[in-house]
Length: 578
Image 1 (cartoon, rainbow, N blue to C red):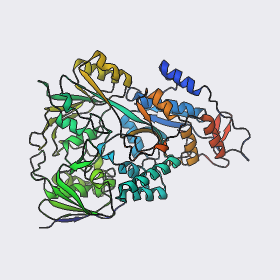
Image 2: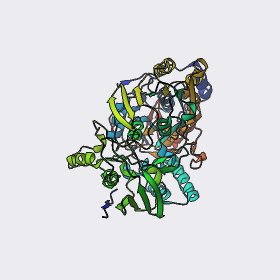
Image 3: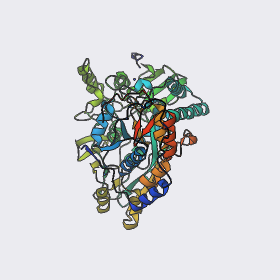
Image 4: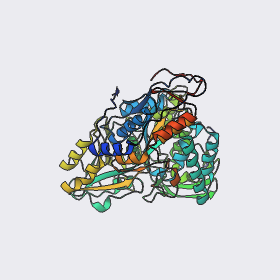
């Protein structure tokens, strides 16, 4: 019997840190050399009439130095430049959880923040970054957390996802990067050069594989890693507590777990291209229809078979924008899903979408309807969001089964021997170790055998094999990027001229050299250099010119009165300090 499900057309440890943070001698020398010739440009005559209100003190949120030293250092360096322009900038250190909660859930309550879009396999197609980050329909509770609004950009971002001709789409993606470059909702810093490591006496080197733009910490490594001896547990690390482990929410670290516990219809391969996974096959039958044949015999970890009802429901649940706003953009273009055979479904899209096999089919997790439908029903008419719900048992169907989650300590998974791609290792144990020096010590002693994340001095890790030859280090330019986000809902960041001036004062090359010790590629757009076909090479600006920034502010009407920057004449400050 044919089963049809149609989708509606719905739209998407806090303390203040002193600025006198010590910088290593090499960094200090580099900074002195690069800034010695720079002097703050004093505005000569004031603009006609009295200047507007003085700009209130600005707070820049940052995670602790121990958690991410490079991004913390970048925030300090940027704040130093902005103080030369007459701004009062405080770098406020908060925990990762507090930063996430403030930026994501209190969208009108912060000024600036350090942030990172991490490299994920599905971002090998630029659509998620180009479309979701800046689409105005996602400003209230989606990925457009800075509140960027530009109808021209919305049209351009929509056009690139609908263009099926790859070279023509490339032009549109690069045009989108140009528009963002002019409007400056972000101040891009670097595409990190990520280093990860493994113990080559525990794991067969050939089984630790590199994924383009991701590195060796990837799905294919985790299911294919071959033990060389009696140690069959992979013990790895992360630097922050995990906020969510959920198939309908993306948490920076939690998504490492969801990727292993839940299956998807497709997976992104090592080459960045989608390949069948929970599907036996997928193919376009027209510009707006895709036929998918679902793999037979799949089971959830509670022993129940995956039915076509479960597959259909997996794509229906995220359409509830008020309950799953993070995942809504990935299904918003689906008009209907129809079962046309025992294991065949057809997706009909509202408009062509070139990225669909990558950004939707490899993004949506296959979930048990019998678990999630009652949860959704119970939240109907309530302000609660389903994406904030953490399951107790985490029932997926993937190659690893959930064992336990002890926050601030570890997450443990075990291999699922009944999976068609059963891992070769026994258990996957993620230890939460905030201190970066401690992670290196644990690798040396064998307490850990896979260093999955290191945010300390990358030069130290690069030198580690010299004293510990059992450790192999692999470095890759990330698909993601680190940046400073400005809240466009709040003055003075609602003024593109002001944002452009701040951006012009920040030298990305200096950031990459001084804050990242050379382990970062200067960034100019949301599309990494790890994606050379899509990246716009002309997006990078030199930056670092304080005089130029001051001239830009003066031209826009801002007035430097003594050491304090004021708004243009007649403009009032509408927010309380801080």
